[in-house]
Image (cartoon, rainbow over the protein chains, first blue to last red):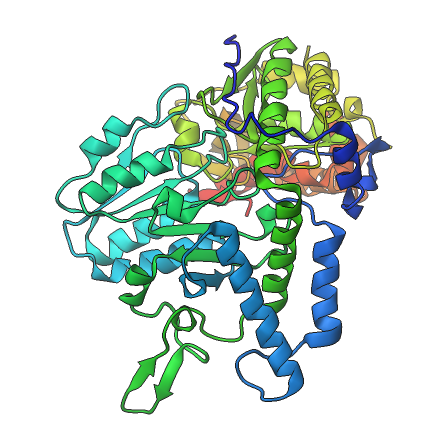
Length: 422
Length: 147
């Protein structure tokens, strides 16, 4: 058994959330108050999706009760309000990510669609023999869209390896980026290992060779401050539902210079300038990438979620999450036969483990019976599972409302598993 | 409230740790693979079918305690039976784990898996090997997916 390594405290100077604060925050999430199999719900599946605070639910309801209309169409009052709500949400996201302009924010269905958009539109310029560089720790949503592109164009997919601890080595990016590399796609925070990747350094390296970088941010903005200008990345994709917002809304940030040159993704209403049967001209940014009636209520809910986390401070949430992960990594070592998968120095939010002789699915069922919700499976990262020689892992992932007691419930649940299988 | 001990009975734990007929028989003339993409469970079932009788049944693969134990218990339950009997037993077993009426007498030892009915997410684990057996008997040598 390998002892968990200490986790880097990135924003250690900030005061952590106090127990009292966390209790107050918990009261904002109606779903957390319930009991599961007679036990208080301990929700540790936040990497899959987060729960929603009242503020988000109310914002969505308020939008439907007061402002609902189609956007950028009607001249009536509701149309104006809905448009203001939608574009206001876009500006809110811009500020949250510290993007330069609101037109660099494209609303999508989620991280997956954001990556597919880039693979389709940016990918349209790829030719046979061109290369796409990804890493071994990517989620299927940052693998499969590129594979589809490879099939269409004859381009090649190259993969940066991941170390035994679960870290990427910059030297491998240096080796991997060649004259034919057209894009680098890398996750900000691994959904399996919790590794925080050195995105800034990767971008710097890629830009030296003139190669743009897409960052899969699905796991990041709920856990740490994200500054797209600071990172220097060209594309940044994330989902609302992993950031305490609604499902079905996501974001693609793209640097205006790059986005501007890309062909449309889907065709339809909203994304055009003029249409005739002879020729259609396309709208500018971001409308060109938002065909059809958008998910206005989702955007409104996402803006409310951003307000919510910003009011707490993503820097303080980061401290809280790093603290929980450090505690959990340490505490699970008391369980006989536990092996933590992912021991990189810089980790946040996610703890994957295997229990000797017990399949993750069985761990999941027994923990569920203790009221503890975790994820058991391959986490949409089958190549990574193969890398570590495990069919599946048990994954606990944290959120701003998790407490030290939740870590204790996880650990005592794991002891119960050992007892049942002992 | 159901107890996890109902699900993880000692017979199940025993069969998951020491699965019976866990091998690839040389003389098998039918086989099929079952795969659960949700959890990655894989099972390959081999049958030696002679004169409509399952002379030998074995399996290989990896999975959770429920799917492994179920596969192991299945091989014991159907070995030596007629094909129609094996198929009838599958219908009966499916009734057991989904909480419908099931003939306990016909199921015999398989009733230890009755606890699965309180865990709907685990029904696929318990029936994976049976689906593969069914495909093998139908001579559909393809990967059976639970999704």
